[in-house]
Image (tube, rainbow, N blue to C red; front, side, top):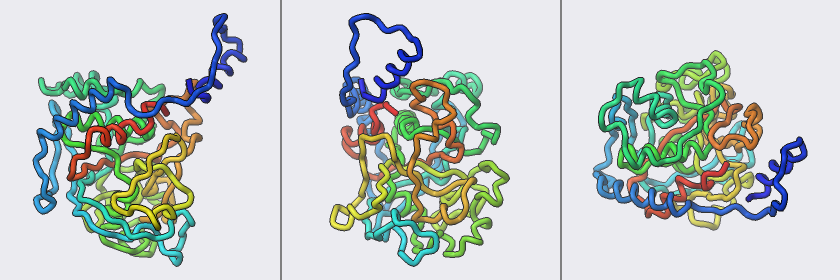
Length: 364
């Protein structure tokens, strides 16, 4: 048992819980990587993904719409050609923080990315598969053995939209673990490999070929014409896709809800990339905090919404969760945080896919 878990047990004992005689708690490092059973599931999904591979040439990539089997729920993916871009912000940029530098030239392979942030329409099929099947009168192909085998969230103790709306609105307040499991479930449902974007992929897609502070220019005072933020969002998130898209057709890259990327957060910025591998960079970590969040939200002002702006995850985002230990699925205090999915053109090995889907080995 990991030390943080044993500390919780000791706290319970201190509060009067009974402890069986002859049992001793010994801290040890938690296991990392997917379990054997989970790896079997990943291997089966990997085989399905390879069998369904419909595009292998970047020149043939096109935008597409995916329909979730047994439902009328759809989501749109936008084709992004690979290339080289300058990641981070220049020292002269207004509002710049030290963790946004030094600027480095990054090379990325082609991928698709969600046109919109993931909505409750999509995410609740993962959260409540049986309830949604009845509600939507789902077809015979709704259930899939591989998708059904993916770990799913426990029932939340509060209504997770917090009254801000569901139909067409972005899903929020999920942990990075929950977001990665959603991607695994989505991959099983569709036969395409989905995951969270890397930090580099996210910034590349947000910039859409631009080098300014925002994709629409350097003037943050104009952000209300393009995005939902603290001064125009009426203290809540808004329906996805209701403001203008960036030059590559992506909506809400600045604002509405901030978005998980899969990288660990490094306050030193991109110093490790100056002399390292700059092709498809990605920071793995076996530590829960901090992870990286991008884009800013309805609760932010322009400075925090710039293309290069970064935010570190925080344990305080679970403060209102009454459970001990805290939920591995929900960040009740992060009502500003959602997700957007990516599908790389090249399908990696099953082992690499398992790392993306099990970055915390189902521990949060």
